Image (cartoon, rainbow, N blue to C red; front, side, top):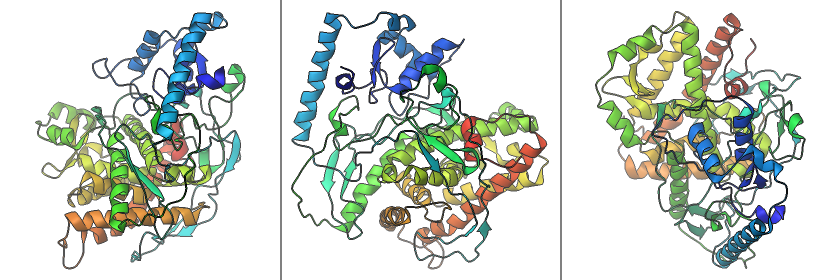
Length: 537
């Protein structure tokens, strides 16, 4: 019966369910969330109006609304004591299973296969060794562009032990979900990386979140070992005794959502795995058509994972500055400021991880390569996203709900002052390019898919993906920024030149963080932050 039930989406968030938990059909993520909410004294608060959308993308943004939805649906600790379902309950579930199977069959007959969003098979508890040994010289593989200055980067050494992650960080999973109105077009390319691209027709409303950093507790969407060491990637659903799950020494990826060739068939997002067999057909679209579809898909992923829409940000720009809040941050204690910024950064990176999982082809890469790309690129993508919140007229950045100038983040530490100054200068320089949201999304995908990260194994596939994204970015820029910005330097040239600067910012961040941690070893950073930015303290 359990195998049949799994075709019914999670009643709480619409993810792929794994059975009846606490009396309700849910996924492993919502099961774990409800278990934790009942095992300790919690006092969740809603930062909005107690009517947050709870779905696969947004389910971790508001714990209060998620718990209330669980309770409304009937989840209860007592439900586990009732034993087997009654005949009436079983018949109701069987009817729902038949309904979803009928929908799958109907859409299977009409939906073309998509190799960009191929079926992904969840990993079991494979031990992954991220190769973070040795140094490398920067060599931009996105195009023929080569930075004037190259430098050598030595990653953190591999540590023997893995990092112990509590179960509180095991329920953020979202693979790309083509929504109603999805169009699919089979494509043929000379590189062979895109056989089909799906683009969603409508836009999902973006919650107002909590500004650049957002509010609420972040839940790590991807678990990586401290220092690039051993990483255990497994489902929370692993058949392990409940008591031992809490003590597993490893990082977790809750792999309950992997898009199959027919994922859009279930209205809740949960799809029963099956294959669509079709006779191969030859289609020769214009290369620009391929790039257009790729652009729409990545732009949609970007829009769905930004805490604020660009319209809301610009509306916040027009509000008068609150000097009391500016002084509050300027007078904040050194340690408190670091932890505040680390929390905000962690929340942004959680959304970046969700964005990465929606980039076509990313989920097809090995778990090793996914982890390497996210560990190396997460801070760089966070800085890129900061440019959305930078107001050129005020030379300030929207931080939560406050416009803060650069000096609000100043400290007495030289390394930190340099980091703040360089990050603000970079955000300003990107804001001055007046990029569209689509261009920023494609640029972010290019940075994510950089082939110069140490430890990558599937370089050929990553290179093909990055080249396809770069082609889409060039077409988008040619359409919107035809006039060179200075001499014969185009916007695209300027953006590619900034890649080296992003690498330098990442190293400045690690340098400042390492010095701060050495001086304050007692401070506890968010778990995801510690894993992504592991330093010798």
